[in-house]
Length: 186
Image (cartoon, rainbow, N blue to C red):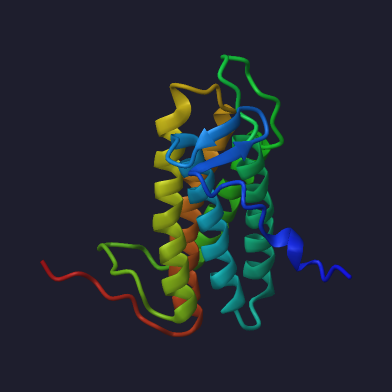
C-alpha cells in the first residue's frame, strides 16, 4: 500500500542536475535554478511572515496574493527557453500597478520616514524585512539571467516593487504593534 510519501522525492537530482520544463536537465548551479530558488525562498519567507500575523486579515490577504504571484513567477522561470522568444506570461502591468497601490495605501498610514531603519521590531516586522532583502536578491538573480533568456518585462518590475511593499508592510506591522523603529548609529 502506498502512503503518498513515496512521491516526495525522485532521486533524479543526486548527480547535481535538475529538470526544467523547457530546458530539460540543467546543472543545479545554473543561474536559472538560482533564480527559481530565490523566488521560492522569498515565497517561504513571506509564508513565515504571514503565519506571524494575528488579526491582520488585510495584510494576510495581500501576502497570500503575493505568494500566488510568486508561484507563477517560479513556474514561468522554469519554462524559459534559450531562444529570444517573448514568453506568454500571467504577470502583467496590472499586477505591478496593484503592488504600487498597496505601497501607496500603506504609506499613507505611516509617519514620514526621515532616517534609515534597522530591520527588526516585531516578529512580523522582522520577517517582512527579511522578505524585503530576499526579494531584492530574487530580483538580482532574475536580472542575472535576463541576458541569456527572454523574460516577461513585468516579472522584474513586480519583484522590484515587491521589495518596496515588504518594507512598507514591515514598518506598518511594527506601527500596529506600537513598536518604534530603531535607527542605525553611524
